[in-house]
Image (tube, rainbow, N blue to C red):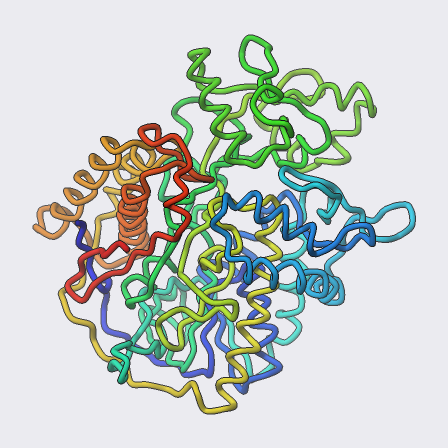
Length: 558
């Protein structure tokens, strides 16, 4: 079994800040949590890895799902979510999502988010894969995340001068600080260490102390060679939570978006996705011979759940000896006018033109790439992890809403709903005296660091091991190779100094290691986890795989 370090190697904090709550991340979940907390507790500290407006939410093209139409219902939304989740959703968490979702979307509108409207002036609702009703709200056609981020950032900028809230930009959170274990043996969270890039009073490595920490750090895209996630998505929150002793679950369920622009076999990093909504409007998938293959795979054809479409594409690529398939939207241009695609999908149209593709005239080459992570820090419906005082919301969390596979456009809603619940729970517990400040205690074991030079190696290992299609041989190989990377770093034969690229690479390595162990344990195929050596769903595996880091640094899987 793999062993990992329980803290990052870093300089001692040169400054200290205090707050009632530290929120880490500035996507929809982090911004919502900070805005909700600002009106409920005396002091909030929001830490973000880049600029305030640089959260992953900006990149969300699809939309936000909620039962807003009178002919729709939370019950119908619940049924579609459970179906997509492959039998592993937590029904209680899904019920919270779909029943509280419409109110949270209304509050988002009240905060200034402007959604596309229909002829009657109401929010226009579309349909995406896995949904049996029109319940997807969009903004700017394919710029929903950017509009939501704009509105929430504007709300936060408006209160920047409020002494009750401080924003620290360009700050990477290194570790969650923990205190002495309580009677139950659990060490409570009591703040974070972070590294701030820039000049000023908050510069270099420091410590932010608080009775409650909210992780809203987004996804793990940079664990893989190619992803739709921004470069900052290096799994920082999951890795920090693991090192703090938190349980992480459903790590093996990685959603590979079926239609990501194929830019050649050597392409890596963040790649443009072609939104699910394009297929929702009627675009079809063809192989390189021009054959449409999805109707023979699933009754919903191109609108089947994402894992079904991604696996079908991989199989079709293998059958034709190709490294991509084609997304054909030319029929939309013919039926609705040549300007329809540019009006409905202006961002995608611009990115395709940048790549030399006019999708009104030619099919678009696409292939699956990492897009979303259904797993994360295990929480209850109020965002609480099993580390006292440590919360997680948004993509970094494992609420049980997504199960084995996220239903399209549920992620933005999850961030809204559970960030709101977490903020209100924290405020109530602080008022009741249930959350108090603890003194940080250094965790056992030597700190560690993986050199930045090893990142491409780690990404290649993750792509070949726990990638789109997995098997025991590949996963065992990934375990061995990841261990070798860490051994080389620990032996001191490589150059690794405490700095941003090394800290990020260490997080990428730790997440890849935990993900590999979870994928090895689950000997079946379900949702975003496909094992070619165990291709069928096994009813005995209708349960969660949980990974923890033991006191000796060993990854414990249960």
